[in-house]
Length: 136
Image (cartoon, rainbow, N blue to C red; front, side):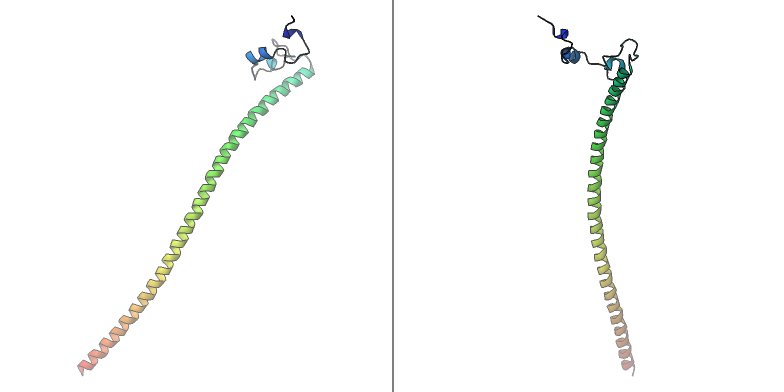
């Protein structure tokens, strides 16, 4: 019976071995099986380009993961910002309403004060007239 490793055309022949022994991600020499593991020198331009492609792929994966994390953080911050803006708008509406009520109360009190001043002046006139009549 032939071993699975005997068929050179089967890309999954060493799958079990690769699953049990993962390659170091940052080790470019081991990332590409066409490279010389001991010297880390590429045998040809194709092998060098494959190694660079592998590095770029891993870097892209890391950046994608960081981008996802930053996107999630940005989404949380956007939600907090939206909530704060909603609360600020509501609070601003409440403050505006209270200010308008205070303005109305202020106008009412000014009118009452003016009425009492006029009533006081009228009372003073009546009192003066009364005293003049009593004095005669």
